[in-house]
Amino acid sequence: SKRFQAFVSSHNGGSNSWFTLTKSFKDGRWNRSGWEVIVCRNAEDTWRKGVYVDIKDVTVYVTVKGVDHVEIEY
Image (cartoon, rainbow, N blue to C red):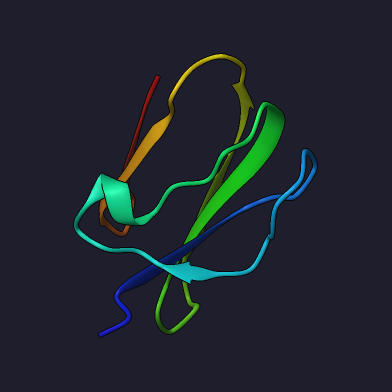
């Protein structure tokens, strides 16, 4: 099922298409550097949450545990 999807903006390359989130960090990776927008949405597209982050020489983990429960770790 498509519980949640996410995209990372394409300011620094890559695609800004929506991707279905999985339960594993290794399945959903984007390589970027610099400022990017990360957005998550539910399958019905009735809820969205986004954040603008500086991805500079770090790994950013985004964990969606449910609507209004999104964790971002550097």
